[in-house]
Image 1 (cartoon, rainbow, N blue to C red):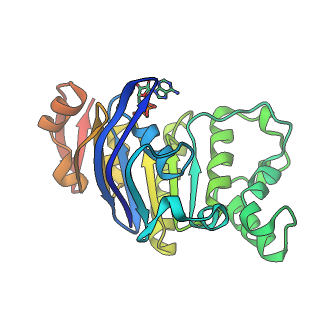
Image 2: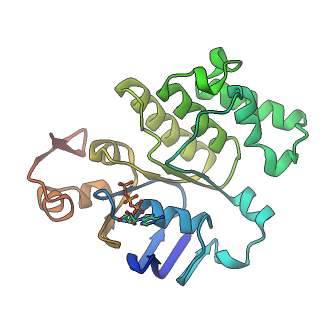
Length: 250
Ligand SMILES: Nc1ncnc2c1ncn2[C@@H]1O[C@H](COP(=O)(O)OP(=O)(O)OP(=O)(O)O)[C@@H](O)[C@H]1O
């Protein structure tokens, strides 16, 4: 479990997170939602130790995040940040191969190669595995980066807006793939999503943030309502039920 207690964060004197308390349960998909600037990316980056913790405490599997060695953390948790550069002349296969670095230290062994082949297959990248990243479409590149995060084979995977640039078919396919892989391999995926319907349709848990605080958390059926959209997103939209999940009429 990821346990976040009383985490506050400031940048240049501005308060970004304010006393965040949150338990992210083990297994399945937890969607982090909220308006632009709510603090979602900042919270993920603190959990992944991309930024230093200023106040409060974060524990992963009851271990203090600050005390976990770099090597152990790289095998426990992977993050796909929001901003991805694409200027590198690197092939999809090599990019995904980099994801094995915590295990291979740069020398891919048979197990690494097998895992890479399996992930290229399951993320439908086989046919473009020799292409350079800067020749791909935005959506293909996004899939390649997500595969690189996945191939790290970590118990916890943090994905910041992985549906960026993906069309509806690719978005649905990625969400159902993540959901079934998480269930099959008992992984915990925390995913920042802007489209509330993908969160409502696929996530096991939803955590909503606003102005640097967690305002509500729970299963989609309990969280997503017209009152929730009004209070968190300042918008009035209808919510109906479809396939036993809430659906926002946009
Ligand atoms: N390096 C930085 N310098 C100054 N302000 C920052 C920096 N990083 C984040 N912020 C500010 O912190 C707040 C939270 O940003 P963050 O990216 O965590 O929000 P978010 O919920 O992920 O937003 P979005 O949905 O737009 O990606 C925003 O007001 C942002 O402008």
